[in-house]
Length: 471
Image (cartoon, rainbow, N blue to C red; front, top):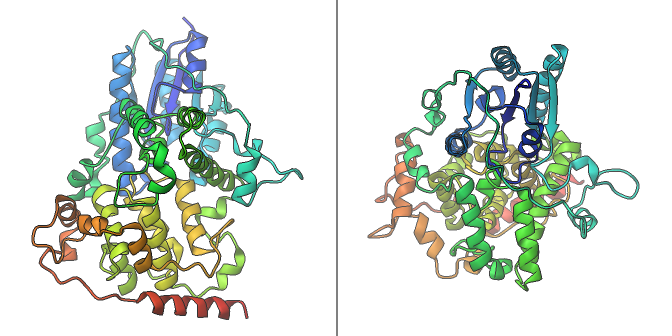
């Protein structure tokens, strides 16, 4: 038999629409799927690592169902893959491409180390519709503004989704595998893990069902409903796309078909998928997007960088006195997710009303989001702060009170997440209290706080700081 191929799975935890797996099956070689708890996984935040563990568990079951296995190893990627190659006689390691700086550095080191030992390495597309370097401006550069980027992709075909293979060729002997339970990937969730687990939709089958329900029931009204946190109007697929439990081409083709069928909201959904592409396009070309102001002139802006200040602490705990902000921050802590409109409001309030650096919010989200995505999280925060490419203009300071009146007109979203003042708080509001660390000292019987910074006061202060920066 030919030597086996090690299939290193990362953010591509599915069987369908998987370019790497499709090509690997065609070789006829035995395939050994591998997941590594490596240096990049180790550095992930509590909620992303917890949710990743659930995805790995689901994929392991799916592989078992088709006569394969998922081999688990913990340690530095290069060391683990070297050891597995020696144990199995594998002469090739294949993986799907990653784009964030930490993953790219890991992959470069791994490729160099394995190549030096005569072990073939290949990376494959699959996480995006279009590779970042394949989309260029007319002058040959990269796009810095979303709308021209989006227009450049009109009519461009990413290809059809690939079917799942019925079976993966197996080796005669499987190498030993570590135990996912022993890794305890949810260890940093503490008592919040059991709460957040109730809100997860995990695995390839669940992701596909979620897409089908969205197209059948909600995509028609998506253009308007997506802005309403009080109703279930979004796809929810960010959770599944993050871990590659569903292919991006599968989502894109479903949206195109819905548009052809006359669904009004399909065009808006397509634009959201392209926004995800744009985030990776920017991250690939400007890795600084994650770590520092994309626009250097914002380095002079007088943001507070104290993540433990009273203002930042109140924001993290959902105790700012601004009901839209607090409801959203509590939704985040109880579910690991936050409605997109709410993300804009909490981001604006932190960076503008509270004059706190976007990195404080970026890092908190990176620890709390189950749908944390390195490109989307960074672009979203820099967009709302004003420091990024294609950013919200400096004078766009969202008023959390008027935004709440517009997008939660009956108060359903606030009631769902803020227990204080309700004689019989709903389960969602109590779930936040159950997930919150005990040392926060929160209870439903507490008085709801007065605003730490009012809507008008915060706007005036932010605009004054913007004007001073430019003088």
